[in-house]
Amino acid sequence: MTNRFATGDYISTSKIVEISPQNQLIKTASGSLYQVIGEGQKAQMQIIDFQLLRHGFSPEQITQLSLAASGVFH
Image (cartoon, rainbow, N blue to C red):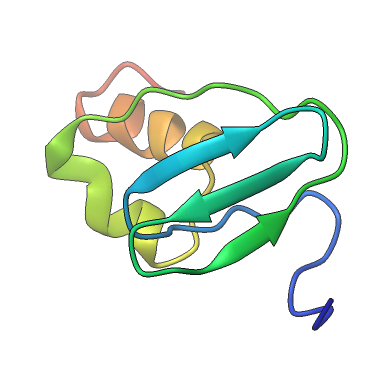
């Protein structure tokens, strides 16, 4: 409702405590309520990379940074 996020933005919230797929609502432990659009996608993150996610990097960007750090990325 506040239009704080654009399509495709990644956000980091407090722990998700409830998901209501029929209403496309997500409730967090802090009491925030998010209405989402679309189906979204799952992502797994290493705890060591969590701060990058909190600073706005997407899971794809974090993967590329990890690959570059290990010398695999060209």
